[in-house]
Image (cartoon, rainbow, N blue to C red; front, side, top):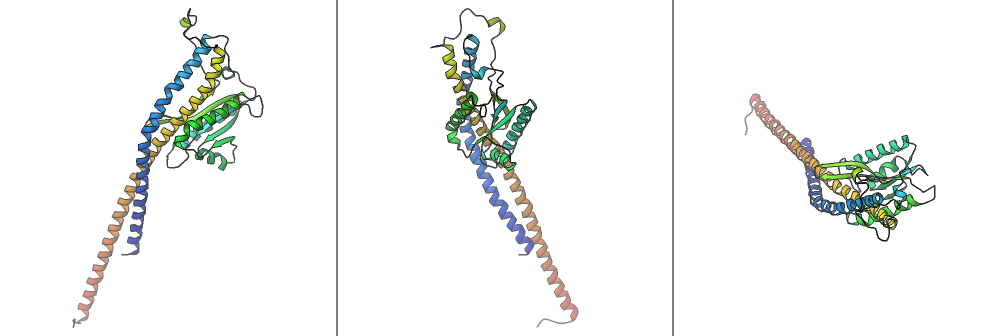
Length: 304
């Protein structure tokens, strides 16, 4: 076997080994998407119900108020941005798309005279900003998929404290979450959602003054609002974390499927080159044998 053929065989074995890894990652991601999507489906109604409940309190009670409902929160001129990225690689453009969306949001806030304060979930986002020597207020890395509810509660507690504190060094006027919305296995979209101040939809004009309210609040509307708003922040963060995890699995499945196909193409390519090199070696050996026989015949010598 010639040196060229040995090199092609080496590349074929390398591509075959990578193909096995890519295929295994693809199958793992495909198996996890269903569970992740089920978690998203289970938590979304709760978050939506909390949103409707808060809207009902704010709409049907003129006495209830909460700092998160104030639209002119401008005491510190700071806005928190929670960026959710992958904790592992091989997920294609999942993390870069989320980082790009967070950068666009931060630039918009700078243009409005608001200082963005970054909170990062995942190693990819954390390494992106730290490699560029850009400040990160706090990061949660690494994290496991089964610990997402606990992680969401921890993040919510930290941000609720920062949003309600009177310390001007830590106080945040606004809070955004940049995650990836899971629509299907084939469609995910990085998007920024503002959680504070809360954006509530008022009642329709013809329903603004009903004789009988739709809700009765016990013990009172303000106490109900004090209890609902922190739960709302927790539910929304957990839901966005779960949607981002499902999106990460879908992105990894697509990326690994593409990588598997590329490895197969490389195997086919180098197999053909190896066969061509082998055929060239055989042809060269035959040519040398024939040339040697012709040389012996021309010299007049006979085999003994």
